[in-house]
Length: 297
Image 1 (cartoon, rainbow, N blue to C red):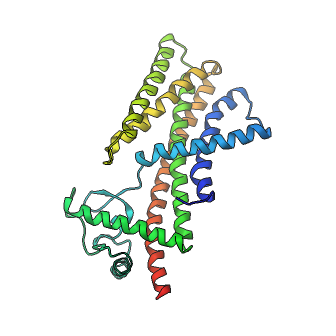
Image 2: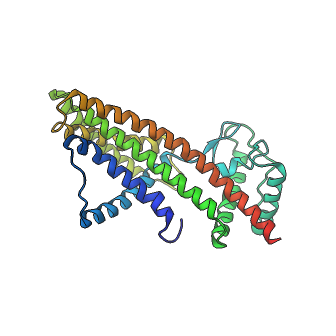
Image 3: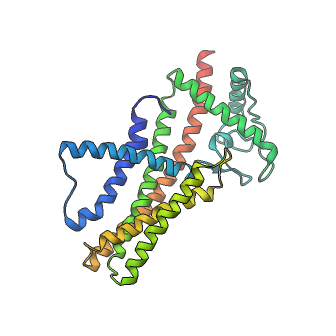
């Protein structure tokens, strides 16, 4: 984490939080043709609120949308680990050997760059991955301490931004979908919306308790993703209940349905871009560390 408030706080917390705040206001603004107040006090409150919401979005998305990728054996691992496999071609063999020499000399850690997992769930490879990850954070810390980590920090800020925006678009899509469904004014639809809202809130509470009380060993990925899906349910229910007062035409409902679809597409686009920047972040740290070693030689 970057120590002081800078572009990381803006990219990682403020912009995603502000984006979610704006997207949640969008249906109401379109339906009533009114927009948020521009008064100084309201603007300051919105900025603080957006920053806090941005932190929550990152907490929500970090475990549900991990930066891990699939290696050639089908294992899901961090890019910083996969790029050092003998079969991976992101770096040349000479580069990986040079990196291994520097890490061995500076930190006494063997990266085992000539090895790769022997199939899925290779338990013997776990210590190697752990050493690689430890070395990655040590290298990153060294680059930050010596103030030569501009590109890695930018990549980290960008992939955090995109991950937050992907989550914000997903939640906003659920909210707009709820507004669109408000065109159905049958009594049973209102009951369903209330039921979804209550169920979602209760399920979120249960999942939150599981995550907070989790043991040092991480929970399965599906648990974190179930929490993210559950957290979107109250947005659907609340969107439907709020839309009952403003959705009076099928055209407006169709507009919000179209916005929901567009937001889902944007969420997917942001997620794909997030994965790319996460991989570039890992590459930048390893490359800058080797470049640092060459410059200091």
